[in-house]
Image (cartoon, rainbow over all chains, first blue to last red; front, top):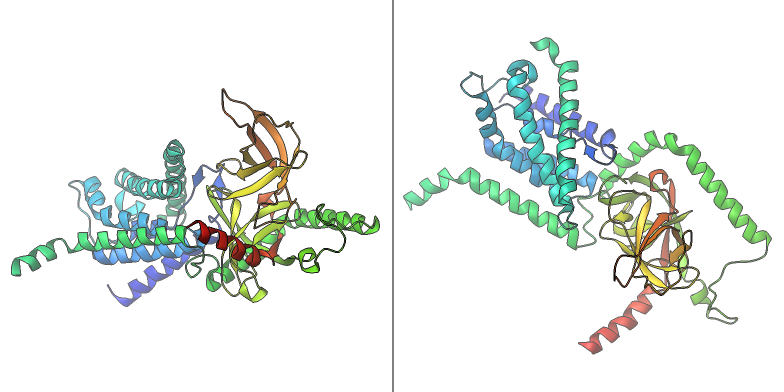
Length: 171
Length: 278
């Protein structure tokens, strides 16, 4: 990966973290849907990146977010899990179609049919783990289940809105 | 040995994954178990500064409400001064030790981060050990209890909100002095549960619930809230009581950190007892 690309990813990392802690930190819809937009950074990193590196990056971004939520380890755990399964899930949905490993993962590059299931599964995995780990000692498992579904939909909505607003012209 | 390396190479990503996961688990456990891990949470100086900046931008939104609560509190204090009555512990008589009378000191702090929507809510305040704030001190607002200090750095501190499902506050009914405990079960941030009130006690809707004298964290008689619902189920020995919090956690501006100066003395006395038991 060349330096300019690294700087670009670093900037987008800072962007999602700032977005998360300024707008979405304690914002929720009726206390059931939360938006973890920062995950988009790990979801959209190019496929060519080494998996160990991806997990390291995911771990660090999770820890940074955890510090703001006072939930040390929980976001990091969910992010590392997401990073580990990311490529496998991507190829599962890509099927037999062709995709250049170095090009960025985006709605414009993939098309709605592959992009949405790929992002949804990863987001659900991440959100479910977070709510499960936060609530594991109070036994509200039904709450965990529907909160993670609604939050996945909310984050997905924000991601798709962002994709349409900022990355559309690249098609 | 060669085969070992081949095997290692094959599974090294998996091993790295498992190592990272164990590290995360360890962090989760440490964070829940030990009170004063402040490096990786919102009492960290850098994080605190970011949140303080964030708060500067957002605080204008609820300025009106903050102003109203402060004005109401001022009015209440003025009333006490004018009527010449200073509220004292009812058990006190003339000639009591002055250190007992002055056992609470209070520090004002500003809330710079606050959540009410999660099941484990924390607050961050802009005072820390430099203002002699330490772990386990009580935090109250102008309308009632707020929480307990979890950890502190030099300039910031994190607070377990009453709206934290693992936090319980020892409470009593103001009318009958019956001891119970107040906990939050998640969900509605304005309602908490009052537990351990036996069925023979007379309770009524809109009775006041205050902190009890058993609490090491809060002074006695700090407002918690008013009863809104009383239920009895089957043969249960205790009532199921819902209390509406007097503090509105969604618009907290300034809070007071209360230091019980006699607490170390009490603790050391009680630890002697514990040692004897063992």
